[in-house]
Image (cartoon, rainbow, N blue to C red):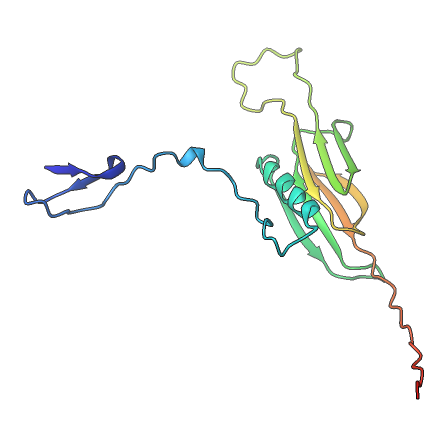
Length: 173
């Protein structure tokens, strides 16, 4: 026999009340937990925009389409780049949109349902998606290429000019 503990936890016992085996615990109310803002410290002032960006990233965690992000080293005088590659098999160039909206890279795919065919089985559905990446200040989208069902988008952050400013020192005697 076993005993039932707090929150409906089942405790298997040896008949003398001593728990045995794995302990299963049901967490009641877990789904009602609210998210505490990560930047809510009174010492972090003016970080509202960063917190909104983190919220946008968390909401965009759908999983489709799958993607890679890779660092591409400098070559032939080009700056170091980031390359985002999305698996968009079945989409044509006309069904894809790549835009930059308010410091966000937005990739959208729209397919129309094929009314001409009569499917006996349809495992490849016409699907729409929107994938969003929040861009840091200064990031530029260099290009977007579609090849073999992979959409590759290259981004770069231009290197800031190094400015050296000499400050004169006055002698106050």
